[in-house]
Length: 122
Image 1 (tube, one colour):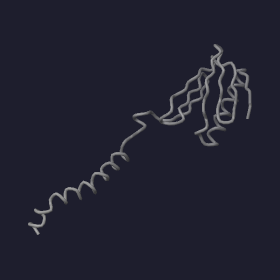
Image 2 (spheres, rainbow, N blue to C red):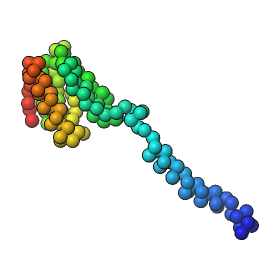
Image 3 (tube, one colour):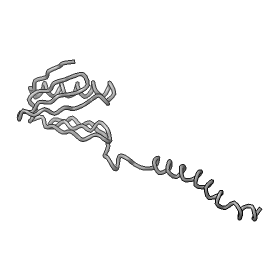
Image 4 (cartoon, helix red, strand yellow):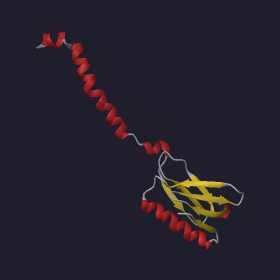
């Protein structure tokens, strides 16, 4: 037995590589916290701002209510027109239906309170 192992050590090394390297890579991927690298997804709609990051790889978008002139609802996005004539587009296409509706309801409610014009093009 010892002679067989001594004569086949190179083959045994490849067997270990084939078995243990993919296992190690999978464990590293499963244990890696991507949120710590990219940041967590969130929706924050408050009295003074709208701040959204709908995915861990998405860019955070923030708009202050005092800067908003109109809010335009389209099928899967919100177009926010600011008082300095800029347009900020918030893409909701990757969000689930319930989250889209909640975002729209809260933005509609706060827009009405703040007397901001709402254009609904759905």
